[in-house]
Length: 86
Image (cartoon, rainbow, N blue to C red; front, side, top):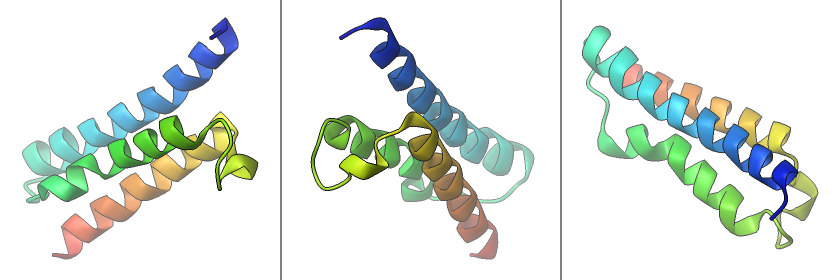
């Protein structure tokens, strides 16, 4: 693993961690919205999908950290909207 791969991994991992923290702290603790456990870990699921599919596989064309980070953000927003709606 070279340094650029590590930076890419760190960018996607950071986005996933920040998404999980925003759902837990931002909505659940500060917003008073009950967020279920599956919704809290939804950004982390995207990160694990990135880890297991980044070098080939069915999502090889999606293999840029920018795309994965955008997917993490979209999943976080969707999970937050789901938590607010329920």
